Each structure stands twice: as structure tokens, then as C-alpha cells.
Length: 247
Length: 247
Image (cartoon, rainbow over all chains, first blue to last red):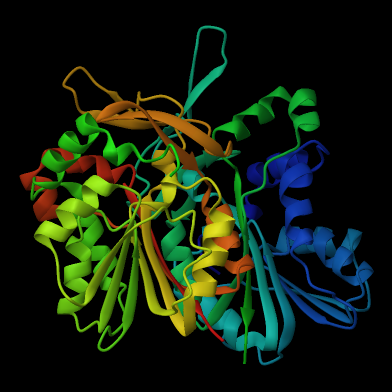
């Protein structure tokens, strides 16, 4: 297992669990609706979920008609929760890194990945692996931290005025790709920054056709209720891409 | 003609001409090499250049083997220069806005546009028009100001330290699309901001297949020679896309 298994760190895990338990968290109000809006008809489809966490999306895929769901995660702690809270005879959870897909021989109709690929250093390899694992006509649908988020080298994201209102986003080093050590719940989480064009060209180079790209923003009603979300005026938090294997 | 014909304003035109006469200008060292790197084999091809300005790219397309080049520009002043400096029996210059393509009945193998589409309000319409004007298998290759540049509502682009070094780019209103009044050579130039996803989805919605995307950065040798280009560490100036009409 790689050192990217931050989710088995107890302090991180506890913080993450708390965050995920908040129904107004950005992944619930912004990322998940966008991810599911990209889903094709899942009826009778086989689905692979890369970085499935505690399996809440796996259950949704079944509810949407999937025949069979395989959930992969590097974290044994996450999968323990998944097996307790989101189990089904039609879901198989496998404790495995998404950097290590060579011995998977099954093929899938749809490969999803929610907020995980920015932890992966070699996105070219991941794109090639997913392409190989898909049936012809199959989809790769993923969300990741927005490239404008992964760009930064330090944690000083926003410039605010004396009333604490955001004036602008402090964008740095967008064109300098590679490793970023960030503090998120615990210190020293490693992510990888890639520009829009690198992500797109990597998918195209692996044979994918781009079908849709989203940078979702919460509705104005949500911005009113949760003023912190007004930051989305300046910068989205997530990038989502739907890509297709044509042949 | 639309009010976007800023290039026929004498003050703007003089400033623009001076800028274009500087061989270290970003369009020469960054944008043009990237644009031509996306060009397919132009041998015996018919080419349309939208916003051709004074025709320097039109001449290059001929040199690269194009059979016939049509250069379109909204500015009569620009085309006067084009006819004086870059004329050829195989180039036709037409004084026309790229928002007004309905009465063009010729078809083309490649449609280029260099640094012009960010002046166009309705990019969906432009994409549909270009798709219609292309032969099957034809390419739409364009550069534009980077979405991180068009995003800003004010001209205060950079935060600098006391030594005048750039600390970060002041990104604002990236997710708020639409009109931007900017000062560039003269006051009150109108541009239109669109996010990455809107640009990509607009092309896809018109039937195009995305083939390549570039956010070019000058080499470290150029950054050493022109320290102002170190800004590219934080933000590219240009976005380029190569799209294809498949059938």
C-alpha cells in the first residue's frame, strides 16, 4: 500500500467522518449532485468505484439499477465502515489502491471516482488502466479537487477585507504541476496538481473521448443559507469530467 | 458592424500595432508557436482565419501549403494593412464580423482563430457556425485569452511584495460569466468571460470532438531573458483548443 493511505490515520479519519456527517458539506450540496448528473442509465450495468470510501455512492449505484458494484479503497478503516453501513450481496468491497489495478481482469460498463484522483501521482497510468477496464462504449466519470485549488503551494487561500469578506483568491503556481503537501484535517496530506489541459490531454491520450466537463457552483439559495459558499463566486471547488471509451 | 470593432479606433490601433511590432510580445513567443503546433498538415487545404487582423497568419498558412486562405476581420484598418503587407492571389480578405457568418457558403478544411473569440458574446453560435463551415474531418483551432485572465472584473491583476515581485494572482469572479469592460491600450474594451467547462461543453454541444487543449508557458530561457514572463508560473495568458468535426 502506498503512503497515500492517509485515511487509515485515526486523527484524519475522525475529522473526515465528522465532515462527511455534515449535510451542508460541499461534497453533498455541490459535488455529489454534479457527479450523479453525469451518470448514464445504470440499469443492469456493472460499476467500479475507485476510492469508494465508506460506500455511500456504491449503494446509490445499486439503487439506480446497477447489476453489480465493485468498490475499491486503499483504506481498511473506510471499507470496514462500508461493509457495516452500506453492504449488499451485489457490492464487493476490495481493499486496494487505485494505483494498483493490473491484476483486475473484470470489465466494467462505468467507472466512477469521487474526489480521489488528486491523490494519484501518475494520472496517465490511471487513465490507461481505467480505459483497459472499461467495456466498449463505457464511461469514466470522476470528480476531483478543482485545479485552481490543487495549484496552491501554501494554505493562504483567500485575501479578505477588514469585514472578513473575500476580496480575491490568492492563485499561485497554477502552471507548476506536481506534488503539494497540504494541511487538511491533519498536516502533510499529499496531493498532486495538474492543469486543466494536462488532465484533458491525458484522457485523450489514453483513447477517451471527452463528453462533458463541469465546474459546479451551488445555487444562490444555498449561498444565502451558507455564506461561506459565496467563495464559489471566485473559484469552484470541484472539477468533474465524463469521458467515453468509444470502441 | 458590431460595437466590438475596437480595432478601427485610431488610438487602440496605434497601440496595438506597436505591441505587435515587439518580437518579445507574448503572442509571438507563446501564443503563435502553440497555435501552429496544433495545425494539421495544411497541404492543399482550404483555410478560414476568423479575426485575421493584418494577415500575418494567413501568409503562414499559405507557406505551410494551404491551397486557399480566407481572412475575415471586422476592422477595415486591419484589412488595409493586411492587403498592403500580406497579400497573395490565394488569399481573400473579407471585412466582416465573425458573429455574422450566415451568408458564407464555402466550406473549409481548417478554421483558425487567433486571440479573437473572447470578444464574441455568443460562443455557442460561433461554434455552431464554424461546425457548419467545416468539411467532414475538418478542424477548428483557436486561441483565446485564458479564462483566468478574462475572469477578472477589475485591472488589479497581481499582488506584489515590496521588491515588486509577484506573490499571487488576484483571481476574482471566475464562475460569473459574461461581459467584462477592461482597459487594454484604451479604456472600455469589451470582452466576454467563459469558464473552461462552458467553452468545452459549447464545442461538444455543437458536435465537435476535443482533440487537444494547451495552456502554453514560455521556456525557462525566455523567463530568464524577460523576467515579466515569470508571471506564467502562476497563470497562463492563453488557452488553445483543437477540435474536430468527425462526420
